[in-house]
Length: 486
Image (cartoon, rainbow, N blue to C red; front, side, top):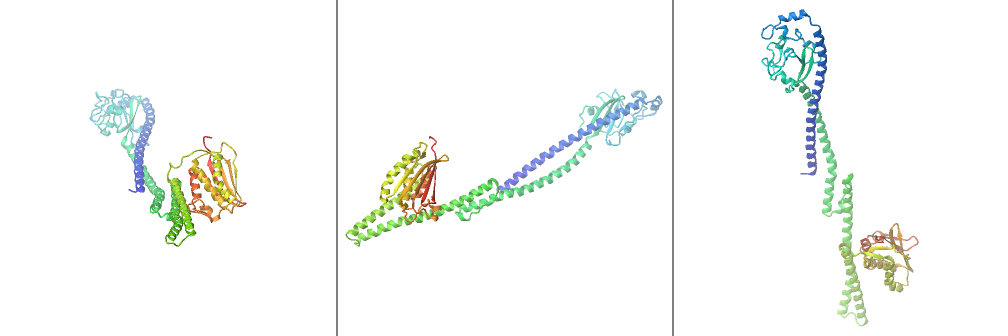
């Protein structure tokens, strides 16, 4: 499964789960809220009805009590006025305001007998206690709705079909109740609308997630295509993928990597071309003189001259092979480089001794300006760094007119070494690639000396740069971190 589909599926399932949990929570929150509100309303109504019934109790007259004798119960039996607390039939229905539709009221005397109100009980289950109810009830109970639970269960809160409120009145006990079905109907209607709204919002969020996911994944898909180009070595065809955040950073890195690989590929091709050319030239000279001597073309002193050329070209060939081998080892082998603390003053003194014959031969002067500072100590492979310095100074001696100047110092916490000469300087077109392999000037030899110097300096954790001085001549600068042991 593609990543975009996995993300969309995961988000969709998470969204469905969250919305389902939200709907369930809303259901119970609404139900609790409506039940609480209904109980509060019943409590308020109970207080109002208690006051009304208390006033009615005070207004009862003997004549009203006498009229009670004419009432009959639901079985046609005459009611005994002495069986009621007040001796009068209580009209509680008229005490319920019109705004409380669906609320039912039941009044019982202190003995548990039902005095009035539409009792939600079976006609055969009219007991407020487990012992007995009065078999005689007011005629108003004929309208009672039959249910299966007893009044005692209502008072104990065991009947979940009703929300009720019980309060004491002068006549006995006032029980107000309203069916849960009414509350649930209101809650279900509101919940249905909320679920519809949640579903619409969820659909919008899901569509938005599809858009956002596509927006985020598309750069990755484009990046995948560019990486395929890298895999197939089509480095020049790699394009920069425009994206933000970490994806943009990765895309930029991939683009730069492709550029580096392309340059490396070109350098590698150029290396083999240059290497073959550099090796071919001395081999042709060796082969030409060897054939001439063998065939008798050269005689007498010419034979000796030919042999000298063969030896010289053989030495040059061996030097090229040695330098190429050293470069390959510097690039790939870790064991070849053995760093230790190196004093820059001592290293420059040894370098001056080795290069002195060449300087005398060319009538050049070497000036070394390096303070006797114990801080001029760096971590490097002494022999390799000496080789790099010899390569740089030898290259400077090839073009210098009168002198070569070497300066050592500490600048901004780094050891800097500058080699300058009074020659013509570097050609501007060679400066960008001066330290590449087989890049050489007019009188250069193999074109590997500066490349080896750069490889050694970089293995020492340093940096090497080349430039031309304003007053004329070439300048090469080394920068090394100061040894931590100093």
